[in-house]
Amino acid sequence: MKALLIGGTGTISMAITRKLVRDGWEVYLLNRGTRKAELPEGCRSIQTDINDEETVLRAIDGMYFDCVGEFIGFVPEQVQRDYRLFRGRTGQYLYISSASAYHKPVKDYRITEGTALANPYWEYSRNKIACEEYLMERYRKDGFPVTIVRPSHTYDERNVPLGVHGAKGAWQVIQRMREGKPVLIQGDGTSLWTMTFNRDFAVGYTGLMGNRQAIGEAFHITSDESLTWNQIYETIADALGVPLHACHVSSEFLAAAGPQYDYTGSLIGDKSNTVVFDNSKIKALVPQMTTMTPFHQGVRITLDYVLSHPECQTPDPDFDAWCDRVIAGLQNLAGQLAQS
Image 1: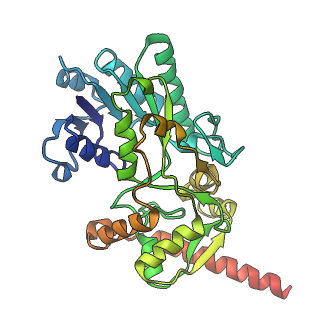
Image 2 (image 1 turned 30 degrees about the vertical axis):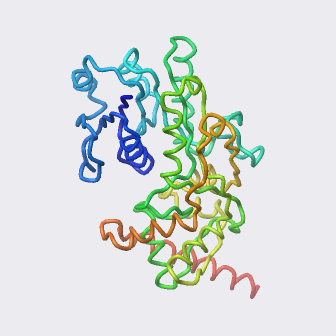
Image 3 (image 1 turned 90 degrees about the vertical axis):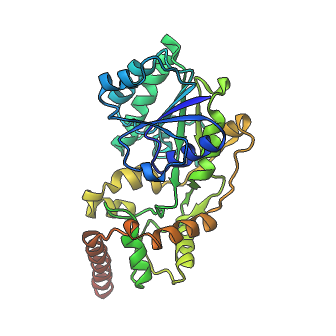
């Protein structure tokens, strides 16, 4: 079986690349080659910009792929480009959408693939919905063999998954924990969330590849483990061997106080909502899909890697100072109100 992955080296896709190679697939990666040193032996590279259609067409001339996986398509123009490139050149086109596309505010915390798609808070999610709609139209009208995959919060060994962080990722929050400083948690920390380790996600995704029953269908692929945000942060602190000093702040306040971080989208449109995923549809086609890496194990794998790799430790002094201002401001306001 021959697969072409557009991207193939990201948080989600690197685990898929590695699993496909282990499973004996002939794997081609179409990307700019920024993580070539980390790829498993046997991968074949088409090093180019996917947006350069003429160059891509020359590179894949005469080739046919059993599956094409799109991991970096965020707006309709990009999947329209893929349709032009791969129509007639693949038996299955798998598009990575997002579980953030499900209806916000949530109508029911139990999410199935039949849950409506609508997110007025986050342009990212609306663009994913538009991509899905275009691709399904091409399936219905032209027979384009599309499968939609909706990940939720998927992480790997390089990224500690959090709710509230700055533009440079999670490291500054980890540092605040290690230094005994308070960290921000949206809401009261009791809403439920789902974290999925990328190796587990890869089992579900690769199980859909080459599966004719998956064509024309949408699937979310997530862990079965539901944790509150308090539990998530406490588990991270436990793995670091430090106490958690939590500062709970409403998502609306964070969005208003930090417009530069787009918490309107990432929190109000996503992480501040309680969601519990029903994975029965993916398990019907991929029975081996299960949670092999619960969060308390996965986060230790991630922290071990991050703490031993300086390149994953990107300071964010602006975010650090912003957190201090938010916390001080709330404490001052509480004091003033208590005295009034």
